[in-house]
Image (cartoon, rainbow, N blue to C red):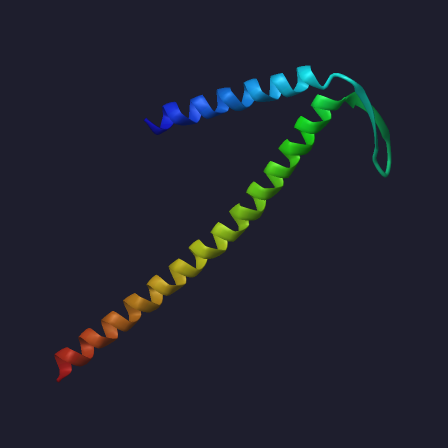
Length: 92
C-alpha cells in the first residue's frame, strides 16, 4: 500500500512540475556569483524547489543521525544500569 502511495505521489509531483514548466515558459535571467544563466521560468522554479527540498532532506538526515546516535548511547547506558541492578539484587 505505501509503495503505491509513494509512486502515486511521485507521479503527481512530476505532472505538477510539467504543468508548472509549461505554464511559465517566459525566459528569465539568473545571476549567480560566477555566471549568468537564461532559463524558462518554470524550469528555474522547479530547480529552486528541488534544491531547497534536497537541502532540507540533508538537514533532516543529519538531525536523524544525531538522534539515532543518542538513542544508541542511551540504550548502552540502560543495559549497563540493568546489569548493575541485577548484580546488586543477586548479591543481596
